[in-house]
Length: 68
Image 1 (tube, rainbow, N blue to C red):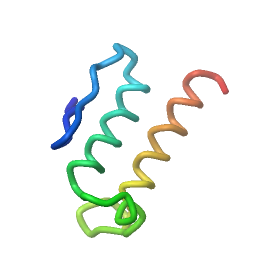
Image 2 (spheres, helix red, strand yellow):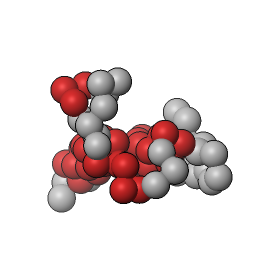
Image 3 (cartoon, one colour):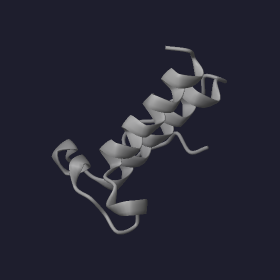
Image 4 (cartoon, one colour):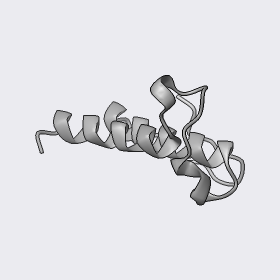
């Protein structure tokens, strides 16, 4: 799991679901300098997803697994 972006990094929490959210945010930060680009779809993501979609997907999975 890569929790490092160029200008910041996260410490793993030990919870796979939460760490997957942190990984998605770190990946977005590493891919783009501006958050305004996070909503653009990209061919390197499945089904034309954006990095914001990947963050939301990780958060939804975490919420489901935490029972909320």
